[in-house]
Amino acid sequence: GAVVSQHPSRVICKSGTSVKIECRSLDFQATTMFWYRQFPKQSLMLMATSNEGSKATYEQGVEKDKFLINHASLTLSTLTVTSAHPEDSSFYICSATGGDYGYTFGSGTRLTVV
Amino acid sequence: KQEVTQIPAALSVPEGENLVLNCSFTDSAIYNLQWFRQDPGKGLTSLLLIQSSQREQTSGRLNASLDKSSGRSTLYIAASQPGDSATYLCAVRRYGGSQGNLIFGKGTKLSVKP
Picture 1 (cartoon, rainbow over the protein chains, first blue to last red):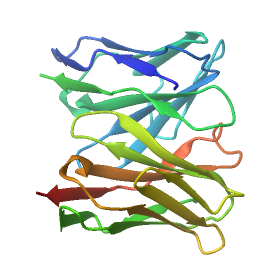
Picture 2: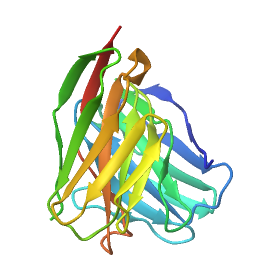
Picture 3: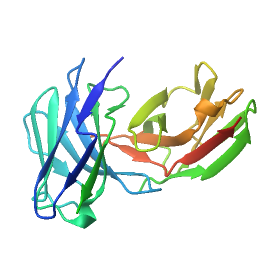
Picture 4: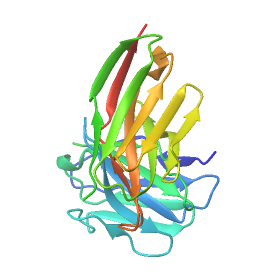
């Protein structure tokens, strides 16, 4: 079945630094990738949608200059949290789809900003 | 605006019991509905995907139904096991919108006691 690899699974960084999270589709070409954020006991909230080779579409309220998304190839999308602050601490999950079927999710990244 | 609600928020049952998780959505114009499982601190695992033209899907001890007109879906788990303990998320994929992204419920946290 379709597999999406997300790395790293956990990261702790200092306030003011940047963190990059990678999302790779291992056995299919992901025309579209999605980035979600999940707070404790809350549902997943879509942050942005990225299509290979084009600029990401951000949801309302998500700062595009803070959460940089790059989808340079059909198998890789990256999310960079720039100038991270403690309030950016959260669980970030990516998902990918190769067409009109279901979505495959990565294993998530727990970001802690200290 | 599409809203997805899951009831109950938490459920505790003894091992071996059959159980039903409920999901409701406000806009019946959906492309498909998907049930996921999420273990603590982990990503999402897709369990069942029901296209809008389908009424149900089965996989092993799991059966998911879809009634688009009433905006409801149920996930039936037969002969529950402690390994089924996790949070179960329901998500609908809408037509059009932001590249067809998923709208998630907050989930039902299931605990199956030995």
